Picture 1 (cartoon, rainbow, N blue to C red):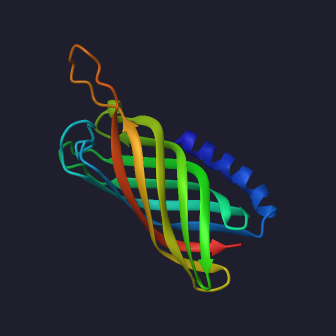
Picture 2: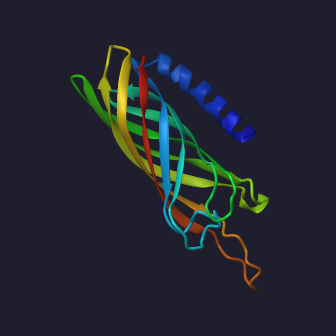
Length: 194
């Protein structure tokens, strides 16, 4: 959690001067629903078979556009699951990602796309071996509709995620390498334009 706070502070500190040199920036905040594909099932022992995992939480993003519709975005998320079905453990999952963004604006609407790279930290109350921090990348986009000159509504943002996660060792003769896991995140909320 301390690493997440430090990354947030550094990214905001670096982004604010950039926004002062531009004529367009936005701050997004809202709801997040994350669905992790099988291979990292509801027991959170990745590499095992199991059902998909659904997590609810929040998303926040700061984007500054510095050349027409091209910009840089920083996105932070927190997703949680009350109880995992097979392990009865609570799960907390945080991501912090940065990357290029492009927006296409027409009248009172805009569509955007981004490619983000960063880290994911996941922890479980059941077992300390289920806590890890790994590299994650995502690509996605969404739609914004202006409600006023300073406020927009974002009804949809979809991101495809890819990460590698450790596999819990079952005591075999050779260590099991990390496995790749896919995820899909839906977000919606309010955008403040400045």
